[in-house]
Length: 462
Image (cartoon, rainbow, N blue to C red; front, side, top):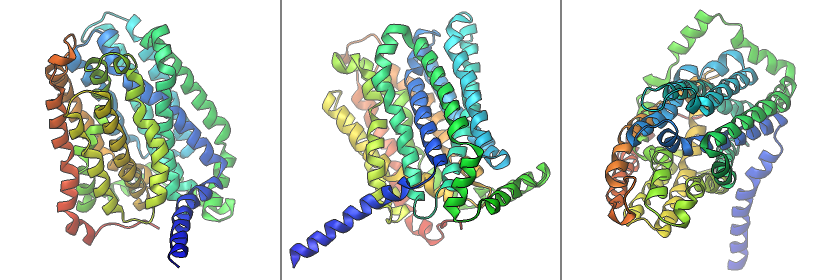
């Protein structure tokens, strides 16, 4: 009897794990195109951002502090751009918004690759100014692209497939983010970092072709109709409803429905800032930490370790989502942020490959537990025609995280992990201990506010 119950229990768990993947497999060509575009953008984005601090050191002539600020300028700029440009998809439609965003990013990446040859090096030299111009193009593009991508998932999925749809989009972006670990070292050694940036400009062109060909207007209309189980004509009429509003009426609509009036929503997104600093350290601190505090294999192949997190996210996120899809969102946020923050204290034990791998694996499990659920929650509570702006507001604390972290990360590196001295003379243990105390504030804040938050926590918008 116990054996039968055990088999039934295992069968139920296996079914819960497999069924979301089966449901997602029957989705549309348009969602496939969106996912493929996101893989390519993950490759390009993570590849560039992981090299950016070193690029500004070696090619533009900035010190660690100013190089960190330039990385912060890109990453924080993207998030603030979402706040102002996130509504673009709501105004002009999904396909047009994504294509425009990719053309902005292509122009920005070309200018960034050219910048070392366009002027003198050093702070505010010609090379620096042109590199900033390239970053502005990337910022504008991503400010439109990411909210549009999540709006697309909302349009192309239904109640059965939405959770896995968001999880897969997040996971596939991170799969793309791991690819630089495989192709980047040889490109960097052969052509330099500026040569790597040229290669990523070519990948951006491929991404534009994917959206233009695979995500056709017909494919998008069919995907929306299939997801809502309605006739295509009715769906097109529903989508066009917003487009018929005047610019003045649209502005009034957005101002009236801004989510900043909801105190619980605002607390929920801002309390995540401490743990989100670990995301920023993935490109602000880890590249320089792994290249300076280690010797031999880790130092020579720091690209691999910096980009290992995206590969782990690709593997773990769909599995974790499938196993926890029925779990309470707030509980998953508490558990996930705690699991993500806690391994930072492992790095405080000192730089060796075991502590580094333990940190990367455990932190990624925590990220897989809470990050896709947060993005799904923000997108799904958004009223009709407000998904883009909700995603923009929901990402605003991420902007503050990038700004704040980029301000102090360079100082910590110069004092605890400086260039040009032996690893044995560094004090990276103290650096990571402080970062651990910062990150753990998020789960503590979520726990302390649980009673207040659960009383009026928003549910999915229908």
